[in-house]
Length: 99
Image (tube, rainbow, N blue to C red; front, side, top):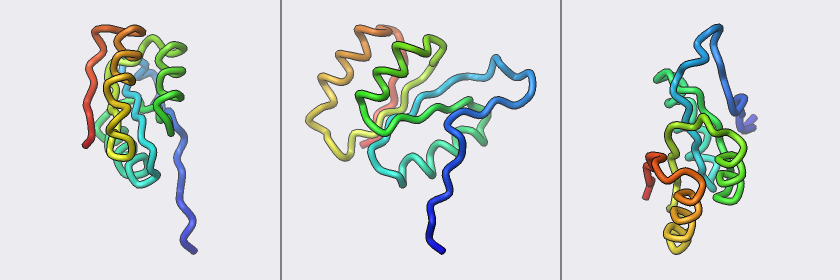
């Protein structure tokens, strides 16, 4: 069976509520299903968003996000406006671009 295994978008272990929080925005399932678990295994609390609009919505609602990983391989022309919108929400948020 070739079904995609999806894990919960956020994983918190016990009392480790002070773990770094990462938001991953990736438009393709391969990026979401391989990169998010790797970050979780590295000790991060990870939320995922399938689109830039969803990522912006999560940034507005989850002020504790400490890093944004943005996959721009599907729509590189939207990087500038997306980063501008992110900066309006949190100007100091570190952003990692996957190109």
